[in-house]
Amino acid sequence: GDSVTQTEGPVTVSESESLIINCTYSATSIAYPNLFWYVRYPGEGLQLLLKVITAGQKGSSRGFEATYNKETTSFHLQKASVQESDSAVYYCALALSGQKLVFGQGTILKVYL
Amino acid sequence: GPKVLQIPSHQIIDMGQMVTLNCDPVSNHLYFYWYKQILGQQMEFLVNFYNGKVMEKSKLFKDQFSVERPDGSYFTLKIQPTALEDSAVYFCASSLYGGQDTGQLYFGEGSKLTVL
Image (cartoon, rainbow over all chains, first blue to last red; front, side):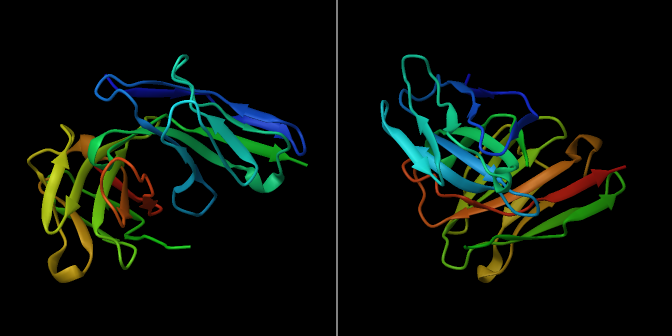
């Protein structure tokens, strides 16, 4: 079936350190799914962080980057230098038809000073 | 940015009762969704809705579930009767466009439903 697996959290990093949250996917009902990272900051609803719709391309937003790798079926989220304000829950997702999103389980990121 | 509001944020009811979860989507959006997240599990698609009709629903969308958006007011999810396994957080989302190529869904903060 279609599924998404991501780094099990919580992930704890010091401010200004680099970050990688792994995401791998399995898409059986669609050959080239669109891939997304969503983020939920404390007290807010889930919001789109970045998306990539073409295999091989990289998406970026707010200093975060993720590359759509079809060979390894991965979409890892990276940031070179995190800030305390990046503390949130991050969700990797793929889109099936009709805006059906398949989510990973979420990764809690805690950034400390 | 655009906000989706959900009411109530938390509801506790007895098994067998009816519950209605309300969602106030982004004002110009045309597509509406409900997702369900059981504690410790992934958020899962329930249903999407456009132009007054259910477009697609998952196997989680049981016969006891219904959705509607009467006269452009709240987009609602009704469960009647409720069961213990309906305890979860329900997330409403909306988007301006449908189809696979956008992914710009806006989510609410969720309504936590506890069925006793």
